[in-house]
Image (cartoon, rainbow, N blue to C red; front, side):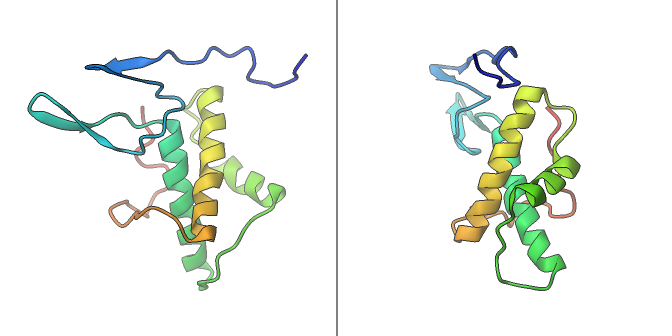
Amino acid sequence: MSNYSHAQEEVPPLQKIADLIYAPHSDLPFGKNVRIGLSEMVIYESAIEHGYQAGIRAHQIFLQDHGTTEVIMLDDTQFTMILQELVPEHLSAFEQGLWRSFFIVGWTCVYLGIEANTEDDDDDGLDEGFDQ
């Protein structure tokens, strides 16, 4: 039997927009737009997207604060210390797990030099826009 702490937590249901069915807790459209009628809107914003973007911004801010351009990969203890401060508390335990995982993905993307363009994001606050 697994000791995974989130095993008993209920997974959020699938959602549907027009004919598009998606899982807001795990699908990865990363802010892709969908046209519905005359309006165009973002499919959804999820803990995954927020964690990913926060990881990118946190790494970029970390580099600025330390006056370096050499990217840094953290170990488990260092990530744990950062995540304890940054994980949005209003998320469910399931969403917090997704947020943490994709924060590390975002941080690693900066390390690998493949991060998405975040110039439009506000770097002043890592937790802005996490209200759901």
